[in-house]
Amino acid sequence: TGLFLGSGKALARAGPLGALLAYAFIGSVAYSSLCSVGEMTCFAPISGTFPHFAARWVDPAFGFAVGWNYFYTQAITVPVEVTAAQILLTFWDDDHNRGIAYTAIILVFMCLINLFGVRWFGESEFIFSIIKLTLITGLILFGFIIDLGGGPDHDRRGFRYWKNPGALNTYLVEEPKSTGRFLAILGVLIQAAFSFQGMELVAIAASETESPRRNIAKAVRRVFYRILIFYILGVLITGMIIPYNDENLLQDTGTAAQSPYVIAMRLAGVHGLPHVVNAAVFSSAFSAGNSFLFTSSRILYGLALRGQAPRIFAKCTSAGLPIVAVLFCSLFSLLAFLNVSSSSAQVFTWLVNLTTVGGIFTWMAINLTYLRFYAGLKRQGIDRKKFIYYSNLQPYLSYWGVFWTSLIIVINGFDVFWDFTAAGFLTAYINIPIFFGLYFGYKIWKKTKVWRPDEMDFVRGIPTIEETEAPYVPPRTLGEKIFEIVF
Image 1 (spheres, one colour):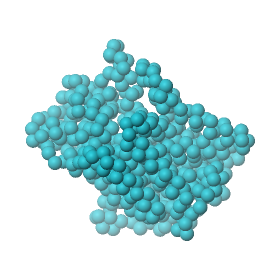
Image 2 (cartoon, rainbow, N blue to C red; image 1 turned 45 degrees about the horizontal axis):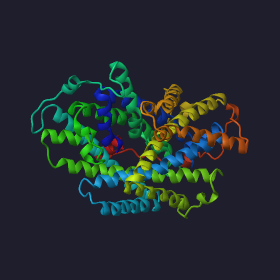
Image 3 (tube, one colour; image 1 turned 180 degrees about the vertical axis):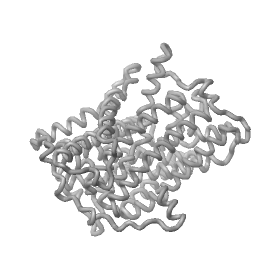
Image 4 (cartoon, helix red, strand yellow; image 1 turned 30 degrees about the horizontal axis):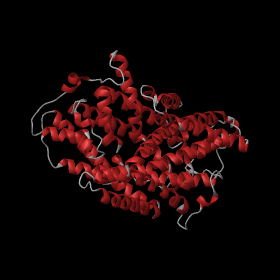
């Protein structure tokens, strides 16, 4: 959803080159985090995933802070996506009273899918993935056609908009332009980060997935190409088909009307397709909320298993569904009704900002945990190259991730100092005292210690490859081979 709708805001603020640089940079940070969590999860596909790894290989207090930070980040993101889905429906029906009913219906279906268990969740996400892949591929191809003059207006745009109004916009200051352009790129980083949020979800369901090591390894290897093709190429095309000063980009409708692709369709004289795009983006928002509900419940379940959350959240059905954790996390989705009134809508905006910064904290924690994991393996003489998945770029990827995520956390609210408000400052930086309060509070209470590399446990509770992996069945037909490449 962040990519489909948010790329327009990025373009308006930073210009086509500025948006492209910001998305490429954040993509590299997201990729470092995914490679780190992918390798750790392929080594230990167990419940609790990276908060458990943080407790096991860094410090139990660090795992506690990471787990609760990620839990509330994911739980709050559920109503964000529910609201996004409901607002998308206003593209066809903007009646306020029916909007409340639409919100309730979306909530019910989202909760039901998660209550039916991981199989229903997996099958629904598979369908949504096909829709999203089809949409972004279609939009990129459509953008190329429009750019090369294949639209009804037969206007060949090329890189016209990179020259006029220009490749870079300014933000906050007009002079000197170099400063304004630099600040514009910084101002897009958080927007770009929101678009990449959730890439680590591939590791969450490891303990409930068939052949988790092989499937997670496959997913991680393909993410690089998806970032390159869907995100980077998508943002590049966006900057080619619409100028950054188009007044339509400044609209905040929340529907497909603010998508740069839909704006380009209308400018080129294409009709009908905006409705198709809105329907597909609606499925994307629903899918995202569905995924965040699943993730938050599994993280809470993992915390309960380790005694870092009330034990009742570890209660499961006979099929292994953490029913209490799912029901509890579903309650957070009711926050979507905050957006019903204008007075509480501001509170909801703060929640949106909190989730993005909390997600960057998660990336920082994942990369830091990997560095400790790497040091422990090296000290204990465990050969990473025997794992089903490992990255040759490690540990340098994790150093890259730790450095930049830490810096982004510090500077994410820089623009509040140009027009200071207490609410804006707290939204940008409240996650810092929350995270360190969780860490030091638990550390003092439980008197935990940072694990030395020779003390780290790489054996207990970790299933063998034979216990988790089913025999590999190679694709035979053309359809199966295509499916293997894409998914």
